[in-house]
Image 1 (cartoon, rainbow, N blue to C red):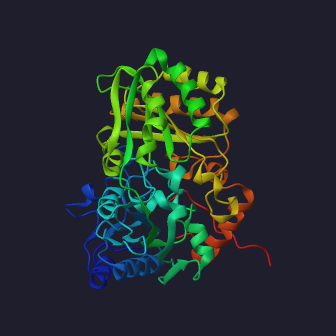
Image 2: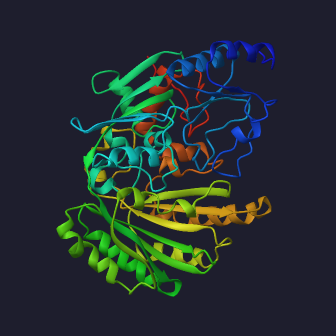
Image 3: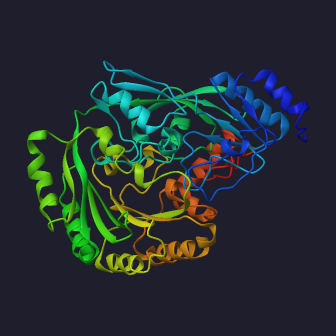
Length: 456
């Protein structure tokens, strides 16, 4: 049915205890903003949910009104998927509680929590699990897309540590996904994105972690080639408790630089033997690496990734980092149109690779690295040059690529790139799961999987 701003919205407000914001509301423009400043979408309604009952009411209303649904957790998606034109946005920001059970080594977390809130709660008890590298990122989107982070080589991806979830389906049902209840749905949530419903609660496994040895080491741009060769060689022989990111970026003053970002999460007595060679390389011209709380490392990049910039972000999983791939990245870095942009390499392997390929929807576990091409700029007039640069580098890196990380797909990436995140067989399984839980594709503001029931 058509939406009438007064009568139909009033019907939702009568059942929904949280705020309901329509385009006439004074907070509408603020409420529709997300981390990526390039996103300017106008939803029909924004429903701020205080509990799972509010979510059910909002989903039921959307179905009755014929509205598609967008789900906002942290609002940090590079593609701006927390908001959609003409959609009913379910805003989970108020569902941000974190309950830690130290004896069971688990955490129960609301779907609107961020990694900053999660980590503060879990590390207070001496535990952690793999989360993002920016503390303002929502736990929901990152986990549902797979969940790369500093601890993944030791503890696996965020989705590997997801033990159960509470989901409101497109039909308005509240279901639990676990090893014993709807295990196929849990499989899909471990990497299949937000395609199957609103995840209002996540249950995670936790791991003892008293702290880490980490930080950032800065090298001059004219040594970037040497640094990337060192990075490749060091990653090849690294133990599981060492993870290193490598970046080509610019300093706050706009000077091109290269950087290594290590995280060592193993026994403190072994730290120097493992991290010492990384610290000694170069030597670096800036930065430092040392013992720190995990929360300090996990929020270290926050200031460099503020909300509101124009962002176009894409990438590839890489089979390796051969000389030609390094030269391709360096050539593009030399032509980078914005000093706010960066090229990032994330080391995989370790615990990530030991999970069976068919155990989760997340795929490409045998990739050696993930590459993120991060374009950011301040003025909309700069969009064409920056997006073109990103796409040219992405195309040039395809000979070394093995699929794509669904969380790094950018604004307007084609459907075939979503399929490339999973492979044909796994995509077909996800499409069948989508047909069971969301046959009308009500949840379509995501890296969308088209519902398709198998024949027969």
